[in-house]
Image 1 (tube, one colour):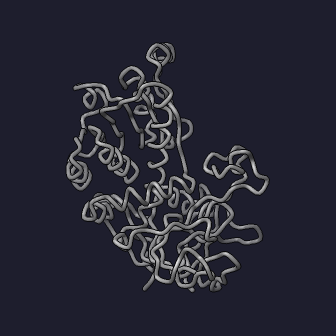
Image 2 (cartoon, one colour):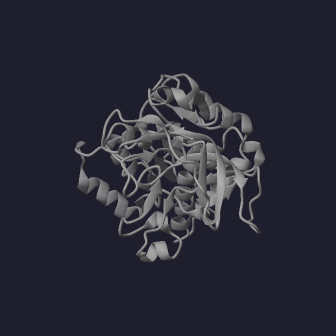
Length: 350
């Protein structure tokens, strides 16, 4: 079968390879791959900056934003042939640490987890794949063209879940959220904010094109004149930072109302420095009882939350989020950014 593979650490090594057809073991589903989303992590692996191949192998099958249809399920399984499914990315470490032992492998404390398509286990960018029944989620059949959005949705489903858990330390009745960044993560964070009935503002640099239109279609407010302008009409109760841009990260820390919560989901580049008055920001965080925390990855609970969020989202809006669909054999096009890109998808099946 065909699969998109890479030699981790070697730039320019991505190719469509012929690999053996997978054979499911006890408790595993055999799935026909439909599509995978392409994100910044995939591009970092393709550039040789990141990624680990499975032990004993030179190449890694890419793809962690999966979508497939069940071809074969174990007897007595909760899944049936034809079910639309998404595979979970991370697996707990074999030790395991305390968090992994409690099913919270997204919070692994010793770093010995593995991740499909990223770290030491093949991904989902292949014509067929197998997955353990405990690490796959069934989707609403309506999501047949956009189900690969689930994995990025789980990232913000977790973020919102944690925001709400932190808020419960005391009285918590948020009315507004600012999302910085209108990429897929930021837009999906905005979607979940709208679903919660909050006033949502989204900040990005571009002035026109699909991103402002997608924000407006949610009934949210699009801002493009910087952080100060975005909060000029009132500081938000919550900020979800989805860019990793150092200036926005620092600015967000001091831009909420008292008892505000800032969730950092964007990953910054190392070596970036900006002028930063630590004393002033620390003073504000302490005196206002603010919380700043980071959030990444997702566990099974968040996959279920994400699937529920997508199932009740406007289907036309989700379709508009997918800006390009590229056949597997033309994979290089998916790794080349275009001005109108939001989410680019690789179609696995011919």
